[in-house]
Image (cartoon, rainbow, N blue to C red; front, side, top):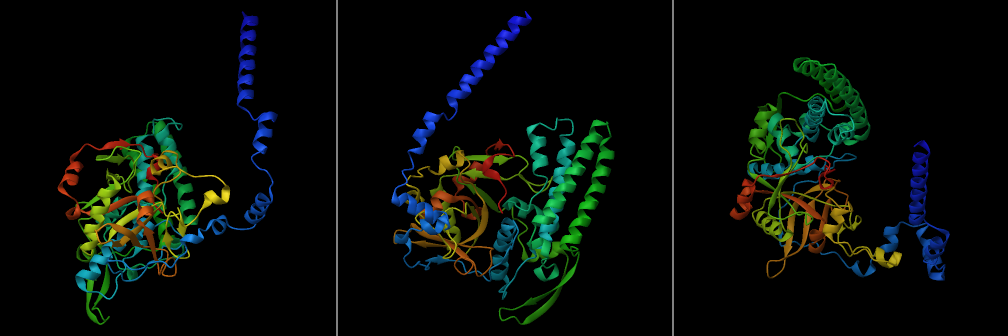
Length: 464
């Protein structure tokens, strides 16, 4: 029997080796592959150029370099460009910018900027608790389980979504920027995030050990609270102490002081913010890889344990455009996210599918459509901005769009990005609109039972 088993093992090994050889690059195959490069003078010139030059420079489509049209028939005026610096807080800047535009219009303010670092402080604390409680909840699952693995891979991040803005603001309120200004760590988050993640992973393993040892729920909660105290101190040292009350000087449109108001973060939010963020808004998505007119929800895609998962209606892009136009015509900006790195001419601030011609440069084609790019992880929502303008033709159809960005006033087109309607179709993914701009037939869809997607779904990485 032993000889028969050995013989069978050797046969299997031989078959595996043969199969591997059949799928490997053989000398004959290599010869055929090499023939794709002919070393012609044109190929040599391209190789020399590409070896020393940014590919975007070489791929610039000169036929698309005409003067950029910056006129918009429908535009909501902004009051100052914000700057997230070297951080992934675009989602937070965008959500707060949508609210500040309303405050400026309502109270005729010369300017207004909410403290991003205040909201970010509690966002990070809540995400830490979400991770630690998630570790407790999955404490009896093996480390190799997909959920536990995902938790330890993503203990927290500085990216996020609109629901995160709504949950954090709704729970902790708002403060003006002067009440809690930015710090180096808030504007350069990578080192702080690295240390927080390292500490949380250590704490997560300790909690799993406690679960394995049969510790009670009260003991686990007590230890978790102690751990969060450490995280709170790290955040305070990095971001500052969140104010519990402060004075705010109200000024008129000319900057003249009108009154000094005393506020808590919650009272300030009630007056200058939007207490009904989740109730008054509908989250929309254009994902052609999934069925339209369905509601989807992403597990663990929230910022706090008692918060809301990202929940949205998947719609054709034309439906989303109708609501966006209605909102802009009513002077209301929107939370908007997209795959901003695709076809971006950062110097001009133009997003256009015709900006670059990589096909001619490489002597091939890149024909995948939006659905195929999503399915193959080639595209996804990566950055949030504030949609604030559209240019309509004589028939009311959009020609181009503009967003207020959070990369500083000197980036793009005076701090903005302009996108063609064709680019909007291909790389726009998420839009959050007020309920009053949503047709009744779309609102009724929200009554559906949501289709739950896993936390690791590739379309739902946090926006940065």
